[in-house]
Amino acid sequence: MAQKKQKEDRKKTTVSAYDAALKFLTPKARTVREVELKLDEGCYSEGEIMMTVERLTEAGLLDDRKYASDFVESRLSTKPVSKFRLSEQLRAHFVPREVIDSVLDSLADGTESENAVKVAEKFMRQFESIDDEEERTKRVYARLRTRGYDHDTITEAIRACTEDRGR
Image (tube, rainbow, N blue to C red):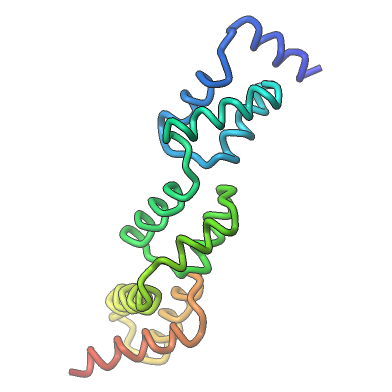
């Protein structure tokens, strides 16, 4: 019943799949799969969806690799997280696994540990009012875990921060 109503609404508006996709892409970049799902909700045929995605890709308006690369760059500059967490976030946007792996592999070797140190330093400053060194370290450790860093990376980041503070 609802699908019939959607089709009737679409006939009334006569918006092409391409125009609907452009409207969806206007506020922010999207992945190919996000556009496909959005158009599918609009009851466009599979053929219309495929042609629209192909046309948008050829025009450079849909590019999962660029999307992933821009996403990673933005995320690491605003709120650094681990490669693992970035991978999860990109999967939530339906970026293909091989694209995710390629983009994350292209990051500089020390990026993960450098970002972990930055985050650890931030939380060390935030928790400096806590007199108990062990408690402060536990809290920093917990914050780094929520950002997806593994135990070894966290331990090294905390060690680097405490060494810097000792100087």
